Image 1 (spheres, one colour):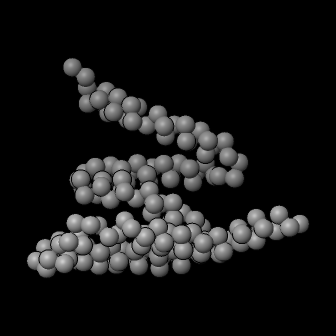
Image 2 (cartoon, one colour):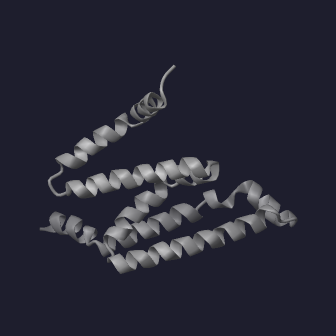
Image 3 (cartoon, helix red, strand yellow):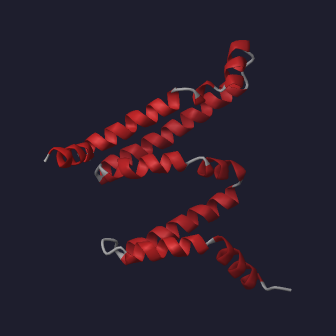
Length: 154
């Protein structure tokens, strides 16, 4: 029978080979500080452990969060620390509001609301439009478009 430590090593190694490759790439990047890489890895692992302990709701949120991360990383990178804190506090408050709205809608007896939920109107044009608008905001805020079009003209 395998020891608890053996099970831990097997579970970690079998699910983190991809992390090893990503860490190699991060450590090879001269612009990244090793302490930041280690801190990021440990924070990520702590988040995964905590999510696993909390349960399936958290895992579902994290699993569906690829679009969040793809937007938050560049958004946060063009704002100061205090501004990112405002985003974080806002996102937490808005997540609470989202929970209240979702619970209310999920338990609605209104037939129109039920039909809307069945159609899942969200997946039409609303979410892609918002994501495109936020992406354009980030491109403008970082002067990425100026760099792109400037190199085409110049």
